[in-house]
Each structure stands twice: as C-alpha cells, then as structure tokens.
Image (cartoon, rainbow, N blue to C red):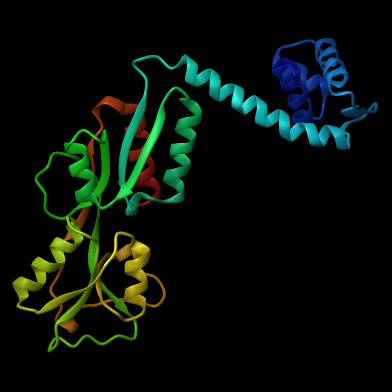
Length: 279
C-alpha cells in the first residue's frame, strides 16, 4: 500500500518539475521531499525520477505511477469530505430548464462542487412547470426556468422574445390546421402558443410532443412542424415567422429563480453566471 503523504509529494514534484518548487508549495524542506521520493521508490521497487543539475523528469515507471497516484489522492479527498460531512450539510437539489443547461453553467456547478466538497449537488433538467411542481412537493430546493404568465414569486434574471420558429424554406398555410412541435405539459411556451393561436382564431394540431429541445429543433428543421422558441435559439436553417405570415405575436419569456433561500451562495453564483453567459 502506498503512503498518501509520499504520493502527494510525488505528484507535486511531477507537476512542478522541481524538488525545490514542490517543497515550497507543500511547505516542506527540500530534504524532506527527497526523503519522501526515496521511500516511495523503495515501496514501488522502481526508479521514478531522473534528476540532472538542470531538470527533473519522470521515468516510464514514474509516468505509470503518476496516473494511479492522482486517482488515489482524489479518492482519498472524496472519502475524507464525505466522512466529515455534518448533519447540517447534505444534498442541494436544483432544477433547471434546458435553457440553463449550458456548458458555462455546468462549469460553474463543477467549480462550486470543488470548493464545497461537503455539499452534494443533485441536478434535474426538465420542463419548468414539472420542475416547479416537484419544488412544491419538496423534492427540489430551487428552480431556474422561464415563464410567460405566472404570478408565482421569483427573482427575475432577464427576458427574451419568444417567436414562431419554422424551417427557413417553409411557407405556412393557415387554411390547414397548423402543425406544432411542443414540450409536454405543463410548459409556458406551449401554453402561450396555444393561447395566442386560439385568440387569433387559427386552427392548430400538435404534431410532436418531445421533452427535449433537440427533438423539437429536429422536427422544425425537417418542416414537420413549427414551434414556439426563444429567438436566441434560432440558428442556420431556421426562420422566425413575422407579421407578414399572419401569425399572432407571442409574449416574451422571463427567466426566473424560484426558491433558493437556504443556499444563497450557490444561488447567487448561478444567477450571476446565467446573466453573464446566457443572456
């Protein structure tokens, strides 16, 4: 069994490329670092470093051990953090609509987890209405999602236009029932679209129901249906149907934080990240 103290010195020397810099980083003397490496080489039965007056380089055996050493130290940190978790710590249960499922937001969550190993993040991505119902049942601590018309208390983050998205080559024929691609109920985009069409007296039919934006986008690109969509989601191959198509106007979407009072630090970080990276 390898001593984790020795492994930590070994990994630090490999990262720094120097016994002197590794000693400074670990607040040890250079002789202590050298002693650690000698003991580790005795345990491994292999030479791990080749040292010259100008450089320190890993041997092939050292390269092999380095991957294992990093994994062992990571598991050790994780085990220590979990055992030290107090009864007041635990799982933060958050819900996010797909509009928030962005690489920058995931990076923020990962960074928060590294800084707060005593907190376990439990993330659910789905339709805002379903997530809010889960929060009402006590299954989620807070939700980040969009709404068009809702009196529920929340912290507004930003607003975006909702438009009718269609394939760029598609011509809409309002003499026929309008095919729609929508998310499952309860969905604010779906509700807003159906209400606008009903108010305008336009017949419609639901051609596709899909819980993921990828499926809705595919249906729209193929010309199978049109869909209520954030203007920022329009990309090549798609068009926003304007007033010349006689389509009714849609409301804007207000992206909102619902709940979240028990976990202010994470909430504040995510809200700031969302406003900077997604708006």
